[in-house]
Length: 98
Image (cartoon, rainbow, N blue to C red; front, side, top):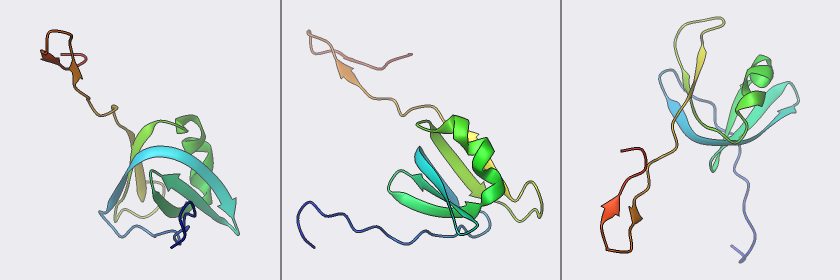
């Protein structure tokens, strides 16, 4: 692979009870399929999810595919940002929100 070039992987289709988690970077309608880029993963989703995902752009989300047919086949949840430790000047480690 050449330096500086990213290879775009084909979107995956979630199997029942599989989940993808990460920041929602973009979503595009292509040929009747919604392609959502969640972290480094591209996922093929039903187009009718476009409106519900739009306000979540930039947020950390999880999308799980269930075995429930109809409007609950794909479930979306908003996740908190991962906690990161910070170091104080005195060397003490603190965690935000604790």
